Length: 41
Image (tube, rainbow, N blue to C red; front, side, top):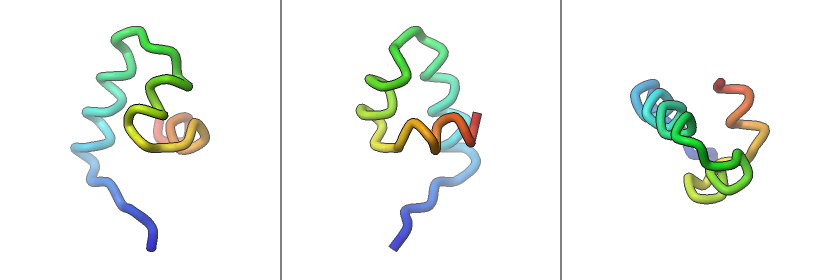
């Protein structure tokens, strides 16, 4: 079953990504793929 995120959760994750971590490290920490990150961005 796919794990779904709410709009609020996605926005919070994208704001955290702006803090300066590399995309690979950040997506690993959050538990999403890099492809999902760029698609939502």
